[in-house]
Length: 493
Image 1 (cartoon, rainbow, N blue to C red):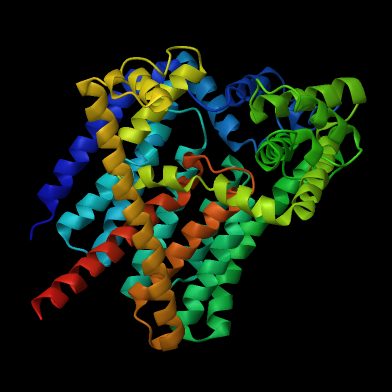
Image 2: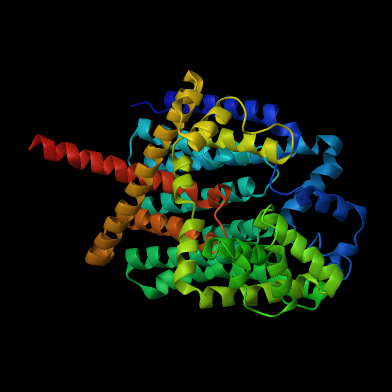
């Protein structure tokens, strides 16, 4: 079958959709945190941030709260293109997500899924996180696309039996290192990728030396990037630290966990007696604010009233959070599972509607437009009262479509989980004789679920899964297609 017309038609649809979303939502500057733009202005205002992180001046230092790569990119675009920087940023993000989508399509073809199913995986990926992250001020779209390109390229090479030579591993290490500069969590995700890569190569070659050799080349460049960044921060702060993202992440998780573990008296869960513990207990008395809002307020109180720097707050918060986990192991495992947002993940596998809803929700967050109006208000009234008279035909259609898509998404996640288990068992049983597709699909499945587990320590926002959703969609579709073929064969007997 000539695959070019089908892919080109899908590509045109996706490009048209990206143009529409960027034009519709782009100039609103939607995103999870305006500090990316503030940090870019801060970087352009003075060069002092290069040698002074501002620990004594800011509760949440602009050049230390996250790795500076994404803000530096925004600053560069501001310098080059002035007020048009925003459109260039969205253009870069959309272009990279298209390249990532094409790499997902090539991976599906390499798995011999067929032209139509490969085009479907391309569409499902482009209608997943990229649909919304292309026009958000957040690094997830760009770093997620780069990581997807690496994972898909690795998979194609692995399936084709092409060697992962030094130049390839150096390139992969440099790309994931750049992802780390965009988003600090790649310091940990990179370790998951290294383990996955080593196990894949060892499974295929049955040689520790060959597997370790390839992994070491990647690790040298990736670790050099992380170590170099930490060394720079050491010159600015006197501490070996990547960022101070934990100064808000840990208090956020403490308060979220406390509210889930003891909803009637969340402050009772915080048993320490540090300044941070006392401020967190007091903050938990305000039930009207979200844990994220309270985490920022806690930081400012500790900085202004107690004289703690961002690094000191992060250190105290980390110790208090892990003490809470140790003191409530069973309860916290339940919290950890809830943090995974498993039902919400289903929407990442089934098209753009949930991603469109997210963009509309961000308009509410930025006080541009209320989220709950029209049919959404009717559905909420129905859920609160149980009275179907609140529902119009539009509300039934809109909510019904989303419910059906969620069920399909849950089915694909179940297929990914079952398929990963089956492929892993086959790899263990056959050793080096295991088929490469089984090795690769098992690796992708494990990487997806371990990425969820990593983020669930705090909370899984769906955009956090941008690096792995592309290969997870391919794996879920591949397992589903294989299951359908086996079911048809069984019925024909």
